[in-house]
Structures are given as structure tokens and as C-alpha cells.
Image (cartoon, rainbow, N blue to C red; front, side, top):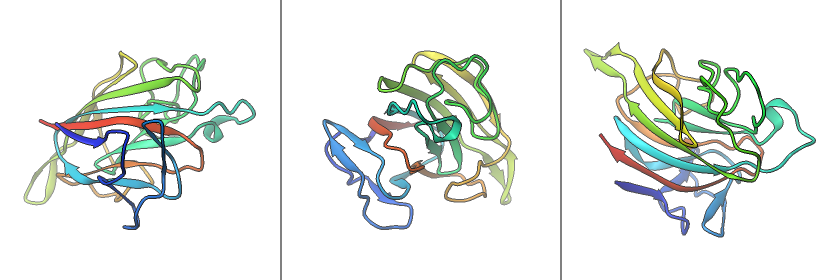
Length: 189
């Protein structure tokens, strides 16, 4: 198992542009600063754990309400958003694979409560440089399965690349909201 963030430093991360990250670390968590950050470690098939806390923003609506994202291999965004109370989540609510697949159910907790994503990710398979099997994921949010062996038919927008690959980093998105993260690790499968 590889610890990507243990609450003490950003040594395992860089900004997407290659500069040192300037996200603040307070009380064992990091809070979104300037620019997306990516893990220095790249992975293929993996089990990942990420905890996040969305700020209370009652004045905001939709994509302006605690927005961030967790990008597997820097290419497939799992939306982070305050979607608490949404009865029928869509492809851009919390736990959605952004613009690709809505979660099966809404497992969100209220803003300011710590939430978790436990992810089993199967990287795409290649032969002769072409994808022979797309990536897949199972996502458990706060102990509830919200995606089960979901086929990821394409990359989502805003990541490190729109082209699939065998490995890639974990990317945490700066979308202008002070979302916090803690206890981030991965285990290669």
C-alpha cells in the first residue's frame, strides 16, 4: 500500500503544471489551493481510498457548490460536490463519473462532514497500442455501492489527457472551492 497523503506533507504531489503545490495543510487535511495537483505515483489496476469534506456553501447552486474532483489515472473524474438531499442524482452530481454516468443512488452526507470514496479501478487493456478493453470501476461512497463494475467508455474532460493509458496519477481538482482531503492511499492490484 502506498500512502499518498498522511496529513503531514505534500511531498507525494506536484501541481499539474509541474510546480510545487500550495494547498494548505491544517489539522491533518489538505485544502484546495491554486491549481490541480497530481500524485507523483502512477498506477494501473488499484484499490484507492480518499476522504473529502465539502464546505458549507448554502448560497451556491449546482456546480458552484463545493466542487472538486478525484481523477483516476488523471483521466476519469469522480465528481466531488455538495449533492446532499438530491433525490435523483445526475451525471454531474457527487460520485458521478463526470458527464458519463450518474451514481445509482445518492449516498452523500451533509456539507462539512467527512465522506469517503473507496474505489476498485481496473485500467484499460491494450494490444498493439489500441484499447482492447475499456477501464472499469466500482465506487463505494460512505459505505454504499454507487457504481458497480462500471465501464468507462472514455476519458472525462479536464484531466491530464483525453487519451487512455495503462497508468497515470491521481489528480485532485482545483475548481475554486475550499474542499479538503485526507487519508489518501492506493494499493496496486
